[in-house]
Image (cartoon, rainbow, N blue to C red; front, side, top):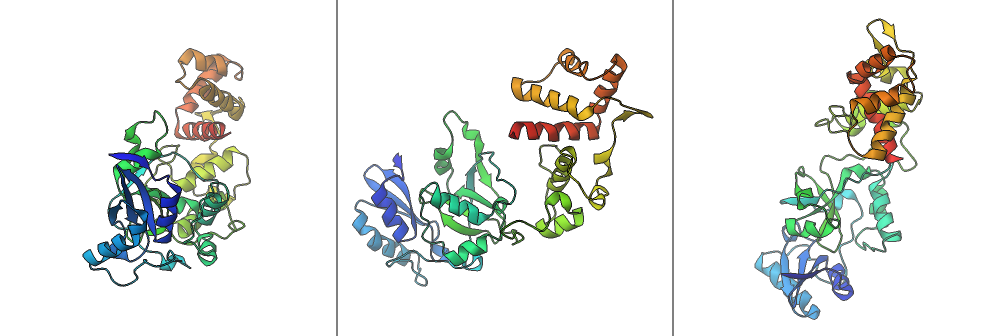
Length: 336
């Protein structure tokens, strides 16, 4: 039984020195796992009663597994200077989903800076050269994972269900950026490509055509955005349209349905659609439950000039463009 997680300062310091993670205490034993070093060594777990015995016990484990080259035993953790040098992550990966998403333009290097400056985590294995390299990768290209399911449970918030923990498929070529010295790893997804430049991309996603976006970020494997059935690029364009941004005509040409004006048949609506949709979105954010038909009509009557216009609006909400406009507005309201 794990007595406590890896919070012992001395054990963490020793782990950092030898490229290990301090996982916690198993009764009176320190549990440590190899996080940096030869590829075959990554993930090896061992136990010691005395921290002064870590070096000797690690040497024994390396000998046991027939590992000689690139032995991390010595005075310092391996210092990586580029993404190309980072070791690969192999084996099963587990993750506790947080639902957190990074602000647009955040890079992997920004994550490390935040860990260092705000959380006071040192990450001595990341050199200035590697940090510069990581500035070329989007924060969406990395994820925190663990090798064992039970280790993920410590990342859950109080009262959060264990169902939030599950396995993660990591493609071939996934790299270990750094361990967190509590059993977790920040990994760079194998399919990630350096597309960002610190200071911002020449274009925002909503300014790119679908071809340009897929050339920079790759084709989406599936549609998982809030709008349901929409690719990340289409959602970015939809949000920009709803915010009144100057989306280029060549971008809108990829998704003509995003600019469809609300109408039923040949009769255009006279209601200020976006203002009404914002009121409905605010209602959802405030009440956190589904809306009944009478409640919806009560809101619409404030905006629509007649019962016939209310029915037009309800019919528009049931269409794909109507659902898209509402859901993107709802997302903005939730994030505001």
